[in-house]
Amino acid sequence: MLDRLFSSGSLPALETMLTYASLRQRVIAANIANVDTWGYREQDLPEGEFRRALEGAFLGQGLPERYDPREAAAAGVLKPGGNNVDLEGEMAKMVQNTALHSTAAALLAQQFSLLREAVAGHVLA
Amino acid sequence: MDLSSIEISAAGLRVQRGRMDVIATNLANVDTTSARSETLRSEDGTVTVRHIPYRRQVATIVLGAGGLPSLRVADDDAAVRTESQPGHPHAAADGTVAFPNVNPMVETVDLLAASRAYEANLTAVEVAKSMHQSALRILG
Image (tube, each protein chain N blue to C red):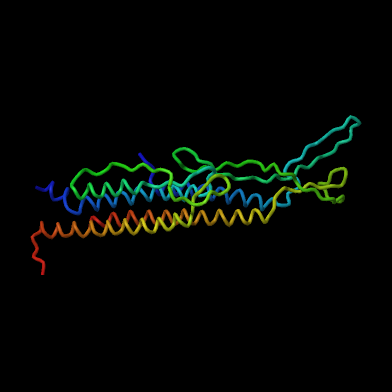
């Protein structure tokens, strides 16, 4: 019964969001760290896989272990040295990603606090 | 184990700081006319000292292990500039002095780019830190 409590509903979906956001932060950090690296091409996580993982989470299927970074489709223009990292674009992506992460974290915290309330048997006013 | 995003950003900070150090060295040596000298002894016994000016260092960033950036420093092969200053202590026999191939303008622009990239990495560290903190707040 407890298993169902954690593996259904919004918890797995929120966990998927949280995992994706923290893995994507790594990829963005790597892009920023390599902004002046010769021959480096901007990387990103596949959004399609995240979408499928999110659907799977809602349907109660297992969560994906990892997403493999690949060359970003919509990268910036090629700079001298064969590098195409768009620093401003990465900063914008980082802000969006943080918003996703903090939303998921706040909702998870809310879900757990509701669960705690239920377990403690308090009557909500 | 995979590297954390903070470690990745730290590698970015490290190379950008290294780059700024190289630029600072170039700027500091913009007029160093004798980085090293060679003593030449001709057959008739006269000794001449040849002064070799500082050579500009170029910092390039290449992809190292684990997808992390790494710094490579090499000599700039561009020609040194020569000026005619016969009274200069480092002047050659023909009265010319060789000056380093450092252009302060180029260095200043590079410094600006490096410091901007450094700040971007620093922002990435702060974002990762705030993400860790918000994940910890799930614990209540």
